[in-house]
Length: 514
Image 1 (cartoon, rainbow, N blue to C red):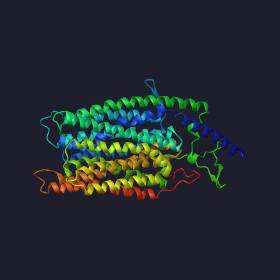
Image 2 (image 1 turned 60 degrees about the vertical axis):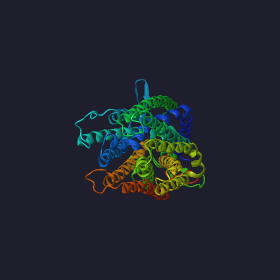
Image 3 (image 1 turned 30 degrees about the vertical axis):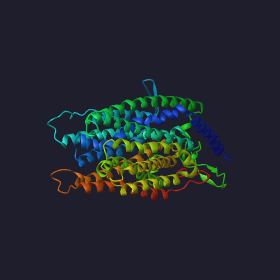
Image 4 (image 1 turned 90 degrees about the vertical axis):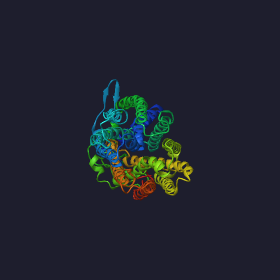
């Protein structure tokens, strides 16, 4: 055996030890702190995607197209910000502030939290146009104000999302631990959404005017609750990540600083001489070249990168369309009372929560592909049922909500886990990958929503200037939206998933999917 190979094997053993210790440091408190580190983002996103269009159209009195512009501006800036934040996060370093030790991920998380807090306040809690009698409905200045606030809000939201996702691969090297972190994260997302729906239901039932969802004051209270709970959870997150960062830095010092410098593609290493060395395949006895770790531009050359991105985009579009238009479906199509705007989404997320309790075991038993297929089939079934449901059989909306909750939770965890599989041990560029995945999500969903909103304005706008308004046509349009769009997204996700490379039984090819 040559000297470089001997050195490399020694380094491999040390790196394995470091990775094992890294997984050992993922304590229960660290898992809890990580899980709730996205709660403010989740609660704000629930308000955003579930109630923003209702809020803008019924409380602020925007036309559907103007409300769609506000939503699209946020999605576009979110899409642009995510890969940029990923690049900056991957190339940054840790620092200390106010007694907390911020790693390169939590640093951007903190920046995003500040921006989200300020802009969310400007949209939901206080607006300079509040109490403005001379402001006209659909005023251009109001549209610009809300669109700008939405854009900045989503830049902050993207900073929190990308940095929090990148922590999954930073916190653990083991696939099962990463899946557990992903599942716990999504469980916290579901609990966050449930809190929003329950508070919204309380506000509708207990705060005058009773049983009405058009009062701006109710959304102000909802915004205040979101920030109070979200910021409290964020503080616990920083405390947990502070402890984890200190432990990792101490372990890195004891290990000679090998943690980050030796991580390379597929668990392989480059020798200290800077030359490529080889490693024996235990199963086949073949030698493969050891590849260097990937930079951000290397990912752009990987076909698997684009395929996983398409799966993630389709998955997120499916979930976003269901959450955005389920409220309109309940009111316009099924003619149900306003309290159901909280009850049905609540049922949807309760079923999602129960699904996450078993998704870790399901993924481990049948793999990513089959679990994603299972979730997609359930979503297709629920969306198909929405098409055939009418106002005379509204009681069936409850089991349909359960199906959609189970299906969306399954495909969401499956989609994020596929991104984790794609990244593997490429920790130094993981935030860029998550940023690009989110870019496809936000841009795809944003364009889809604005197209639907523009079409909806021509069909559903109750205005004297709209000669084409017809309640039946509006009801039918929303029915087709909540049915055909999610079905199409699920089918596209399945097609893209079918094209993904598989990971070998020996564990090699870490950009393959289990």
